[in-house]
Image 1: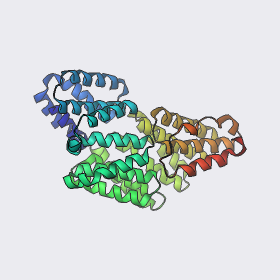
Image 2: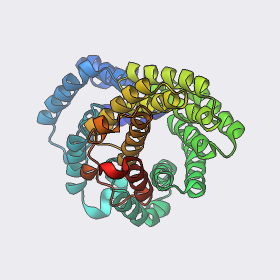
Image 3: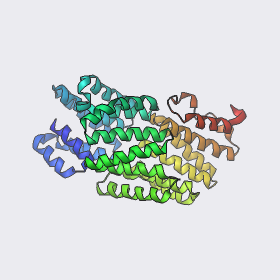
Image 4: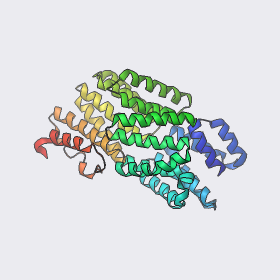
Length: 361
């Protein structure tokens, strides 16, 4: 139980050494695998995911206290999610929620509730995630926990951004950043700064770069490698928006490598779309097709971000059309198996796909 509580603080505050020493005081023979979990959270070594899950399951068998059991279920869910297994992650988060009394959920299992809704969001159930989080806001505001309010605002910001409402997204991201500072959560500060940056891309690129650099500074200081990798998304997009495809390609390839190094599957898929877009802009259509296919495959494998998957398909089709090879790729991705009913801006991407394919559909 102490281990679970201390890990939760470590991940946001970067207090690795201090936390590890405290764990050693309480769980003497568990320090080895506790250490592995900390490394997992920072570096995502895929070879150790299943081992970590097995170790958690060993603890589950020994725990009788329901609240402690829920703490462990939450981490099992996190491990599955880092592995890219969203369905299993979802089931563990749901298990925590269902075994907690409704009136105690905000206090006792908010992070599982947040992660549960975030999984819904990344799988395309945007309206559902938005509606459920908005229902929680009054109680969260009444409780006044800055970190929980920060997380709630981040989810609402992500939903607004995916829906194409940059102004609303920016307001939520700004609020999340201020709340993260109050809660002393540098990871979420860095994450929010990167998110604020992307809302300025194409509107004020100079300001976007300022936020990107601030995010990178915090991420490097605390070794938040996933956040550092994320900063290359808006940076590449800046150069794409300016038509500087050579620089966009340079940044996107660095970002792809960083995401691969930490085994961040969704991040790799996203970065590969930017590589494909840069190659498309440079007229290197075969390479654009190669990377667009890899991007689509990544999103399809992870069952994440349906809108992003549609965008990658559009890059693939545009590149194929430039080479008069549309017939070869018309069925590469089946848009009919993508859940996009809850995404307000899906129709414009579907219409663009229809226009590119023309008489082929």
